[in-house]
Amino acid sequence: MSALLVKALAALVAMAAVAELAAAKNYTIQWSVSGNYGDWSSNNAVSVGDTVVFTYGPPHTVNELPSEADYKACSFDNSASSDQSGNTAVTFDKAGTRYFACAAGSHCSQGQKVAITAAAPGASPAPKPKENSAAASMAGATGLAVKLALGLGVGGAVLAAF
Ligand SMILES: [Cu+2]
Image (cartoon, rainbow, N blue to C red; front, side):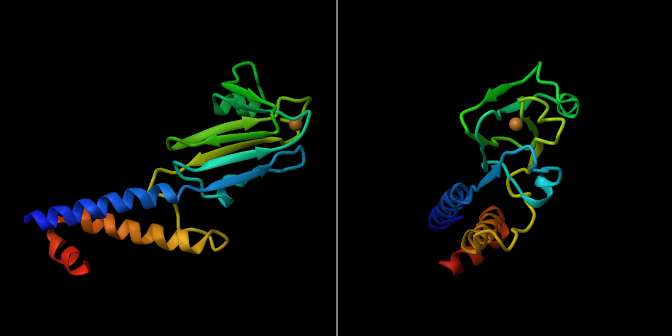
């Protein structure tokens, strides 16, 4: 492989990494007893690197519960964290499901709880129309660039693109 090609591939990978960071999204949840968050995750395609911000006032809290069992039972005994600042930001640094609920009164059993599943990077479903289309198309281009950069057999195509 020529030195020029190696440099071109390195540049592509670096650009892709920057674009991936820029594509991290923020979601806001208006955190209330009547929120009905049952299907929140199916309507909000959270991926690793994204942040979810809960906004609320007293007496609400955002407690992270360690397991689905605690979540279903509205059991706060093992809470991994608790916040009542009114503005709780949670960044998903790995794929999987995390559980959040309000510890005030019986709010949790009234439905003030949400399970949020973060998809692995690159595994997120197609962006929904309401999302920033520029960011979405950039993410698509990034995916293509990574595929090109990783596919050594298409080195000629990469060079042609420059
Ligand atoms: Cu509450």
